[in-house]
Length: 225
Image (cartoon, rainbow, N blue to C red):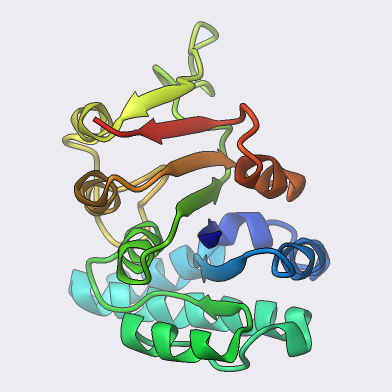
């Protein structure tokens, strides 16, 4: 299959060390023997820290986004180093470059592209652009819950949801730079219009990527209308 994998920056850099980069590189290398892989890396806490500093300088949201994008590209470079010869050793700055680089037959790793697009949105747009078979979004939670599981003991994991219902759920959520805590509406809109098979799962356990690709019951699956 042709698969786009989005990995949250908070997953890779929670401890500010190389362990998650190394573990994901091992799994991605193994998966690339059977699948064509595109990876989109988020900014995580470093991006949020930089964005906070820039915002305190009275920068606009587009400038804040631009700084965050640079951090995602740094994270992408770290993953490229971990992947070595298994990956194309340049970070695409747009979708056309990602498609061109993929002709190498190697794993493609990128970060953000332009202001107002989170890396969630980038991964969904990229999936449509390259005609991916599946989008796997690895985040810091197990999937979509009926309410905040950190605040409510009765929060329940939603195993399946349509893109339309997910859009309704996200309606009104804060979408400033650096605040994409779960998933943003642009990403869901892309998933909806392309009927893209999507799984949202916890990325703290890198093996969840294998489970999601293999179709095991994990996280939240965004199903067709």
